Amino acid sequence: MHNIYSKLSLAFAGGVVGGVVQSLIIVALSEFAFFQLIGTDFKVLLNLPYLYQRATWGGLWGLLFVIPILTGWHHRQRGLVFAAGPAAASFLYFLPILDHKGWFGLGVGLVWPVVVIVFALIWGFVAGAWLDRAYGLVKDEA
Image (cartoon, rainbow, N blue to C red; front, side, top):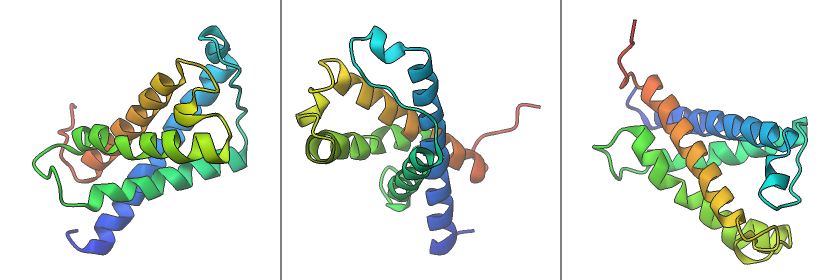
């Protein structure tokens, strides 16, 4: 399983899993009005286009796991570092340019940069945990 095709497909799949889990958490928090509680007007509904977009971007960001850096670390740990990529893209491109929410998403609310970082970390940890399992780095606890 050490060929590049296996590594690419596992990394993409791990990123997809991270993106789907992150999306489901966002939708659940939105349903329970968490975002309104923290002073934002953010609301998202679960639908296929939303989930597909998040899964696809998660998979593409998951390709970072193929880069041979921090190789002595577990994938979970690497995922927390790699979470800086999607967070930076959100802060500097998606939020200000595509969504017109201002740099770092400050148009959504002052707490929004923290929210973006937390959800990027969720993506990175889940994607990395999935990869740790896929590569057999986590022992079964049975």
